[in-house]
Image 1 (cartoon, rainbow over the protein chains, first blue to last red):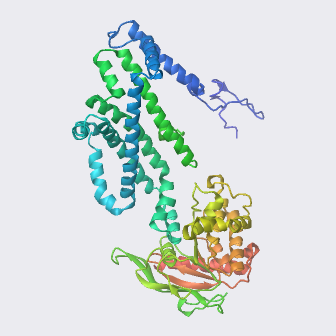
Image 2 (tube, each protein chain N blue to C red; image 1 turned 135 degrees about the vertical axis):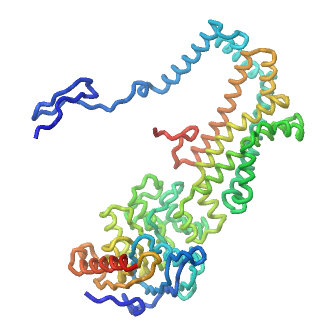
Image 3 (cartoon, chains in turn orange, yellow; image 1 turned 180 degrees about the vertical axis):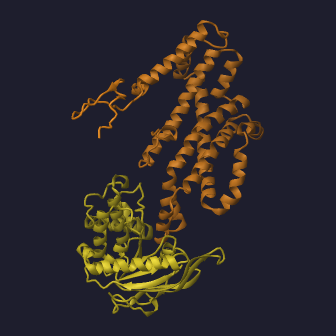
Length: 299
Length: 272
């Protein structure tokens, strides 16, 4: 019985090995981890950022496209400082940023209130599921940005029309997340509450909503992204005094570095909103492991 | 071994105790009578008795249990518990399922107190923390009060769910394969625990199981069910002394009971 193949190539050593009878071979198997997965996260992120910046700089330097269209990273960096100074010295840009922040926060607040209520209606009542849900799905499939002119016509050029579009876009993911969350409780949990004689309200508040919090927060995170898009789109189309208007004016004057730096400051606002939602989620849904954007750590 | 007694000729088990749980002509069908899940069943459970139901999967055992718990209405028949008809959830009933069904946002202690908190409010639940702690201690989970379910093993979670069932001091325990997800050692241990709890409280227990030895070990009567639509084929009285011990499982009478029930189940599967 010496049918052991003694001419095997070891993955660890990369060469054929022979096993002498009665001896134990050297390490012939190591778990293979690709070198790119062994780079520390910070280094990997920095490297990726610098490669993109370098590429950007190269395109600018060799004038692949006109320099008016694509400013250099350095120009953008200088403008970021200019805009930052204006904001810190309470200039007109701070007022604009505050205006957009108000639109986003009001829009998100309305989206949460309406989205959660509709989500409970759809997820908890059979009237909601059979009569309301089809209409919600129908409206959800429409391009919601196309409603912006209507909101402008109805609510004017002030903050109300921006809040309305922002809330309109962010409501649907919250409805879907809430409704899905309420369906997440399993049959045993429902049975348990029924045998305890729990009322419908108790079942909803003490079992279905807590069970569904992970899905509800997924809806909130998608909504938090959508609310920014809604507010800025409404400002593009309907003027006002927010950051969207600043971007539109800068773009029309071909001040491309300014457009870039304004977008960067806007993304800070979006990032803060998104992370607030994540921090609340971690506090409330401490028992459930989910990472940014709801993507699991497993591969 | 004794010959089996037809269901109609009960009483069996502790024949002196009064019947506390009575089912008459209880059946369940779906789709306007087209699908019969459970054919008419009569059943008397005596105070302090332990009964098991054993039968092939899909024979309507769980449906029967849900009807007994007042969670699902029967298509025909009536269920009487302690002289009053069961028309909804009843305080006297405690239930346990195959899964522990603990809620991950509650600590072990709060999970145990959940039934009190749902029925009588949070203040009432707080007033009974000591009892809940004592129950956890009883099942070997002393000091696990503040632990969240995801830190508990399967057996520990199932023991926590026993405490949740017992905190309401139920007269009747309805058990739907409560330990079938556990390994065999843990399962034996839990079964002996269950017997001790039932004997000390004089509780009436009704167990659904797939394990013939488990049914014989715990029960005064084992009911054998036919495949769908389920009905009782036979009630087998188990006349082994109490308290039962794991050593009894190696006794020849024990083996006789197991063999007999197995053969009846096989017959049922063939004739149905």
